[in-house]
Length: 91
Image 1: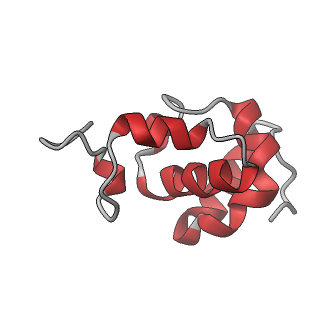
Image 2 (image 1 turned 90 degrees about the vertical axis):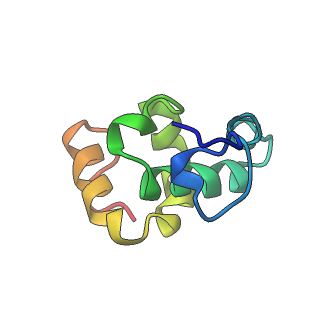
């Protein structure tokens, strides 16, 4: 999951370690958490997302993170609607 420098494969565009990434997902500022969770959801394999976040966390931050989902936005809205985490019209 990480390269020789300890950087996760899904953070190819940012030079931070897995530990720093985990701290950002736990940041007290919901905007910081939403940015990094959205980035994770956009760039990681879907199964890997759940190694870092729960459905509850995703649902709570969804209004803030949806803008960071890029081309995966419709996929995540569909998946989360199927699991009754967010309604289809969300985002």
